[in-house]
Structures are given as C-alpha cells and as structure tokens.
Length: 239
Image (cartoon, rainbow, N blue to C red; front, side, top):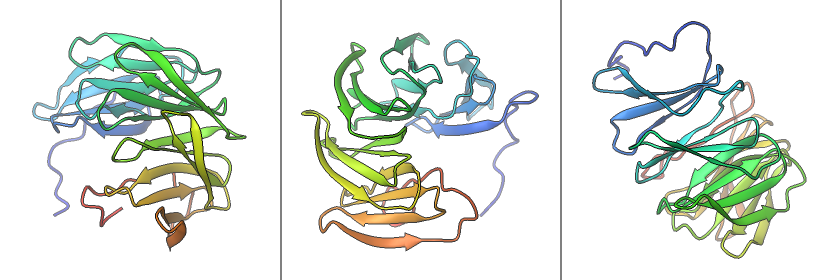
C-alpha cells in the first residue's frame, strides 16, 4: 500500500545509513552506519535495544544475520569481522584478512561464514570455533560480495573484475568463472532454486545467468548509477 507503518528510527545527528537487515524472526533490524556503529532496533517498540560490539573508527558498510538468528556478522575496514552473539551480546573477532572485509554471507545451516576482502581472498570460517577452514584465492582484485547457494554446496564471489567465480568451498576448487559485466560486480545472489545467479554492476546493469545451461538469461537496464545490491524474493519471481 505504500503506507508508513511507524515513525522513522532516530540514528542521531550525522551518520549515513549504509546497510540494514532484518533478523530471521522479523522482530528486529540491524543498521550499519557511517559513524562505525551498528544499532539493533526492536520493531515492536521502536527502541534501540543493543549496540553490536564496540564502535569502530571506520564506516560499517554491510552486515548480515545468520539464518538461525544466533549471529550477526559485521565486517570492518581493518580486515576483522565481528561475529556478534545476539543472545549474549558478546562479540568474537575473526582475524585473517589483510585489508577491508566487505562481502559476508552465512551458509544455509548457519555453521559457516564466508567473507570477501579487498586483499583479494575469500575466507570460510567455522562459526562455532572461529577457525578458518578454507581460503579461496583466484580473484585478481578486491572481493566485493559472496553468496552461498541454497543447498550450501557452492559459493559465488564477485570482485572489481567484470566476472563472478563459483567455488566448491569445501575443497577450495574453483568451478568456473563467469564473465558477465563490463565493470566491477558489486553484488551477487543465488535464486531460491539455485538455478540462476543475479549480479549487480558498476556498468549500471543487473544480469541473470542460467547456471545449468551456462548462458546469460536476461539483462535489466535503467539504473542511473552503479548497482550495489541485488536480492531475490523468496519465491524467486521478483528481484
């Protein structure tokens, strides 16, 4: 209907909002801001309920809840990733990247976390222990986004190269490279059935790639600027 359901949340004076995500149960939202702070809000009361870890001196650009709602992953400019326990409020810092960590995604079973960094690598972490279980190398530039397939067997990663890589993350094997754009690929997402990926690029387009036939399925044009994010509707018919 387009109706505003509640008054806006108050971020305070100054900070820009870079990212926002719902908790899986739909009761909370977390916001990433330019002041280096992550705020979590109760949607019922509109109250800010918690800060996710200590504020950093750097912009927080992305964050994501685990599918089971137990964790909130917050990558940072110094290469660390804050794995925030939403029940206890305690952060665990994952260290290993040598530059800005930006891309972040949980496996469907919430047991593993994938992170992509401007150091050109993708790391897979075991959530329970914080241990690095795999390092994927193959991108020649900065990794912007990562996404697990719905069955959890494959991982897609995008970078400032005009392509997307698909990996068997458990073995570290690169399965294929899909050249799909004319510029940086800022984001990548799997369709709910796992048969397609969608990509958003600095070349102002969104593209769909059929993974079964290895063919470009569709191009969406019309954005006046870079496409920084893509996300499928749960039914897969809307992006």
